[in-house]
Length: 71
Image (cartoon, rainbow, N blue to C red; front, side, top):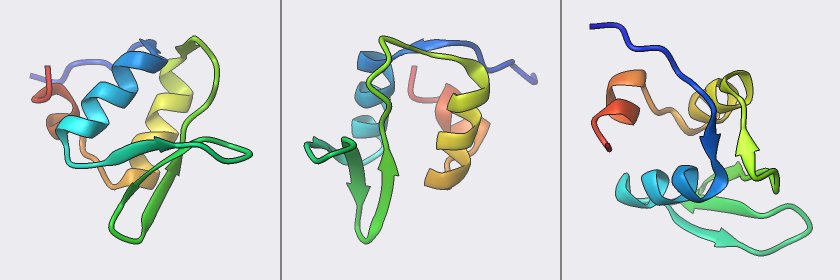
């Protein structure tokens, strides 16, 4: 089943990334999360729209299946 990405709250994005092994958010000028040497910046917006979520997941190397399996 091909589910669509929708908007998520910042808190949910952080929680799901943590379940996938990422650590953070690490405070800096722009908060980010890290997995090994890989970094993904986390916006400060309370809600992250589907387009930006898609960009974040691509940068993190996370597939849609992985994302939806972290429910």
